[in-house]
Length: 145
Image 1: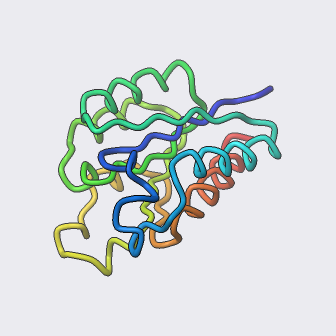
Image 2: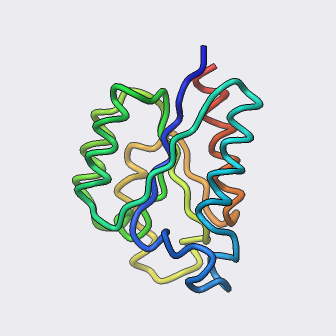
């Protein structure tokens, strides 16, 4: 049975490939979606990618995932460090959650070292560039069967 994995992205990730390529690389969010779809398809699953610059829309997508997704891969971007609302929504999701960060947040400013999302995440991948998303898909596929 095909299971869907939701890939949720926070603020400014719509600029991936254009914004600070020395930190985030040249790949776009469309490139991320293609790579993740290929990895999921190899394992008999599908992905649905969503990006928003608005916290409430991300919360709504997590709520939808309760009925539509077997797992969530999330890069909350700046909301990682500020959003109790996203944490609370993730706590209401019963499937696996993998947190992804393109850069190694632990080598950056001190405020980036704390993640509310990590309190719920079943795993965290940071500093692997956009390849971290594909790694996260591989991991959730092993968790959801």
